[in-house]
Length: 409
Image 1 (cartoon, rainbow, N blue to C red):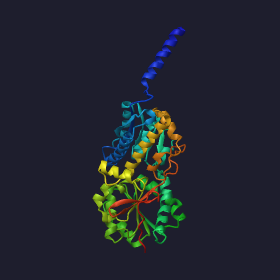
Image 2 (cartoon, helix red, strand yellow):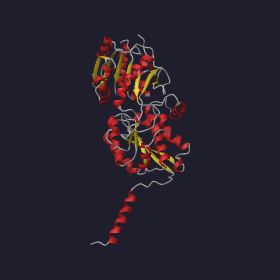
Image 3 (tube, rainbow, N blue to C red):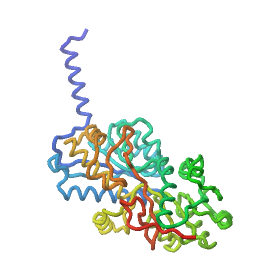
Image 4 (spheres, one colour):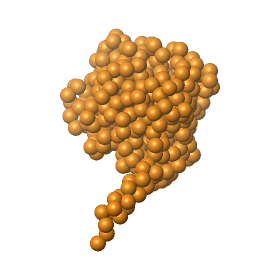
């Protein structure tokens, strides 16, 4: 039988080994690391680039203003991680991230919801707080304690979108829409977005569905679908695509048949519909009047930030990708100030207890409070409208820089 002294020695050694294997969080570190994990390569690389630009701008601004004051002015350092082009690659990237930087305080990003689901499985196990603008309801339906979703969920956006659009038509002095048409691809996002509308949402709002066209991307020819739109002439059209080439084909055909340039109100959704590249490919005439349902955007009250971003990052405007990660980094900073710690567990606890804070101004609705699931309370959707070659926020009023333009019949 081993002696008590031997057992005590073994126990002490084990504890020492565990402590050595765990990251140490100094009381006043010179540097605190935060991460942004997004696609840097592959088809979503441009969105990833915009995420990184927003996060880096926040880090630079925070450091220029004295760093994390509760930690003796510790400077923030951004760790950029490429999730690649698949959920499996994203998961592996998250594992490498935590292995390479075990002292990471928290992070933001992933962009594609399936990538976010994969990344947050890893960060949750490591008890590292993670912020995201990804829309999927599932992200915050898993009972996780270290995942924070700043955007309205996909279901919430779908439920709120049409009532907001109808209210905008009334504000613009147009007749109340009575009929609606849909052209959409059959991928997961448009299907889930229209599900609550098809299951009683249209009826509840007094809208009759008169065109219902679903296609498998990529789209070769939009003629037959748009012909049905011309014949039915709905009061409003939902055009729900997930890539720029399909969007361009549909808008071109609408214009060719005399329905474009705002003649029939077109409602779209998704980050690609506000991307600077869309303007380059499509042209401002085809985009004129198109409305976009989105989770965040730079707008009224944020002019100083937007101008600084445009100058430093060489971008024509501040998209949802950039302003969301900008705000996320400020949330992590405020949580460190509040907890007086760079320990991820304490930082996450501070985030869960937030009720207000300066970082709220970077998100629609202005509220900074998370419910028990990690969803930001009071998160509002944003409606943009392409006007004179620029996507401008027209809703909510707190963010809007212009009024909605609506054709009057």
